[in-house]
Length: 137
Image 1 (cartoon, rainbow, N blue to C red):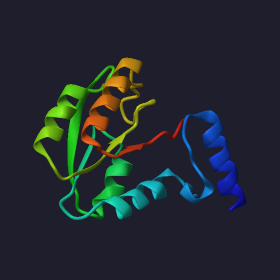
Image 2 (tube, rainbow, N blue to C red):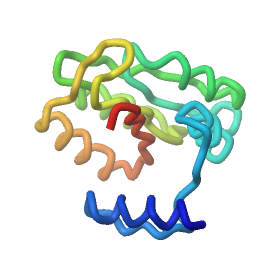
Image 3 (spheres, rainbow, N blue to C red):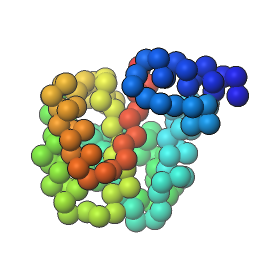
C-alpha cells in the first residue's frame, strides 16, 4: 500500500488526475499490465483498435481473449483521427483503443499536439476507453 500511495501522489502532482492508491495496480512490467487490461475489458469478438502498425507484444497479450483487432492508419503525426472516426461510426463493439503516442513501437513516431487534441475530441465524442502505453515516459 505504501508504494501505491507514492505512485498516486506522484501521478496527482505531475498531471491533472485525481488518483487514489486504490486506483493503482502494481505489475511486474507493462506486458503484464496489458494482459490484465485484456482480462478486464475483453470478451470474445469485442473490437480493439490500434495504430497501424502496432506493438506486437500488446496484440499478443490481447489475443488470449479473442478480440477482433482493427488497425487505424497512421501518418507522421500519429493516428489519423478521420480514419478512427470512420471506424467508430461503423462498429459498436469497440471496447478500447490501444495507442503509443510517444516514440511509438515499431515506427518511432511521436504524435503531434494537434493530433492529440483531435484524438481526444473523437474519443470523448464516442466515450471510448483508451489504453495509452507509455514505456518511455
